[in-house]
Length: 335
Image (cartoon, rainbow, N blue to C red; front, top):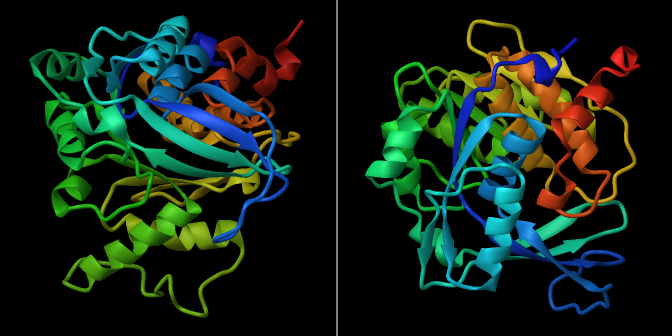
C-alpha cells in the first residue's frame, strides 16, 4: 500500500520544461494521411508537458514546485501563468519572449486516445540563468522533458545539487547524447519511447556496454505489454540507474539496477481524455520522491493520480488534488 501523500514532508520540485496552449477537438476517429473529417467544438486550455507536470507536482503531489520555462507576451502566455499560479506553482522564474507561446494541436477519439502536434514557439527560448540554477540547486527532485532544447536539459542537470534526483520524461522521443544518458538518475517513458530509446541503448552497447541479449527488434521478443516493458527496461538499465515504463491501462513497470522489476496494475476507470495522464503521473511521481517515498511507492501514488486524470477532459484542468488522490488510493481510510 502506498503512503497517503498528505503525510509526506513537503519536498521541493523544480520542473524545467515546456508550456503550451492546447487546441483540442473531439473526433470520431483520428484522420489518416490526406483525409479531412468533421470534429466537435474547439476547446482551448493550458497544457505543455512541463507546465502540466508542474501543476501535477503542486496540486496532486503537494510539493513546493517551481516551473522554469518560457512564454510569449501574448494572451496564451497569460492563460498559462494563471493556471500555474492557480495550482500553487511558483512562476517567478518563467521567462517571457517575443516568440508566440507554444501551441499543441490535439484530436481526441471517443475512447479517450489523443494525437498531438506541437508548435514549440517560446519553448525554444527556455534558459537556465543564475536565478534558475540557484532554485534548481535547492530542489530535491529536478524533472525535465524533451519539448525544450537539449542544451537546456543538460544545463538543468548540471545545476542540481549532489543527492538530488534528476528525472527525465523522455518525451517526445528523440536521440539522446551520451552526456544526457550519463546525467540522469531516473528515466520515465511510455512503451513507444522505451522502444525507441532501447534501440539507441542497444546500439551503444554494441560498442562495449552490457545489454540484455535479446534485441527489442527480435521476433522472439515478448508481445505481452508488461513482459515487453521488462525486456525494454533491462536494456535501458545499462545506461540509466532506474526506469519507469508507463503502459496506460496495463499499469506501469518500475525497474532499478540490482532489484527485480515491479509491476503495478492500473486502477480501473472510465477514460474520457488521456491527454494529460502521463504528465500527471510524472509530476506526482516527482513530488512523492521529493517527499521521501521509494520509487515503487511513488509510482503507485502516481498511478492513482494518472487514473483520475483520464476521467476528465483537458490536461491541467484534469489534474486532481492531493486529497482526491488520497481518497481514491485509500477508500478504506475515509470516514
